[in-house]
Amino acid sequence: MYVLVVLMASVIVALLLFVTQSPSLATADPPANALRRLPDIIIIGVRKGGTRALIEMLSLHSDVAAAQSEVHFFDWDSHYRRGADWYVSQMPLACSGQLTVEKTPAYFTSTRVPEHIRRMNPDARLLLIVREPTERLLSDYTQVFHNRLEKRKQQQTLETLLMRDRELNLDYKALNRSLYHVHMRRWLDVFPRSCVHLVDGDALIRNPLPEMKKVEEFLHLEPQINASNFYFNQTKGFFCLHDRRRERCLHGSKGRKHPRMAPAILRKLHRFFHEPNREFFQLVGRTFDWK
Image (cartoon, rainbow, N blue to C red):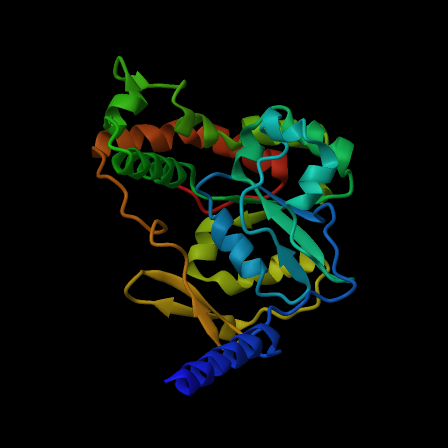
């Protein structure tokens, strides 16, 4: 019996040594030249415009290292006060020659962010992804609705939030976020237009590759992203990614169905956005295929 116990103990010790020392199971060390640094690229918005899809697709490129979480450095005072060293600590490790990217959609509509970024990183390249304003508004409401549902908070219908005395409620945040020209002016007061690349979020949903090729060109990346990186998932109803023999789709919260809205209110929204859209097109020097 004693011999058996000793033998079993020896086997366990040997197994533990194998697990802790075996190169195949140990965590791989990052390359010696990998460092964290200020991001070269910042996806500044817009909320519910497709920022998660954009950063996931951009990370298909081998010369891009992407931060996985929204950092909220430039728009949250509690983070901004921590300084540049804390901000850099939130970035991914990147090798020499790689570009680092972070995305925080709230940056676009925050009044102080453009100047904050310019002071810390004036050479940053900015990506802004926009969608048809009414569709973006509906996505915005849908996300808040489901977040409140999960937290068992009281719900409000979209019509209640959107309408006031039979007119559109201009104080509704989701409506304000779709007034792209208001926020874009603030960015162009600080950064030249050449530093900001606009991504068509609606086109990215329908056919990702052409939009991503434009992003590669803007960032001066070697062309890598190709048709084999995308496949349409019939169940989810949108494109998923294929990367290095691995398939991945966006989180289940993406692509949710929008609430139904009275046709009269939809028409009112489309009429309302007509002039702001025109001003936005004039401001950025291009148009989009919006209603």
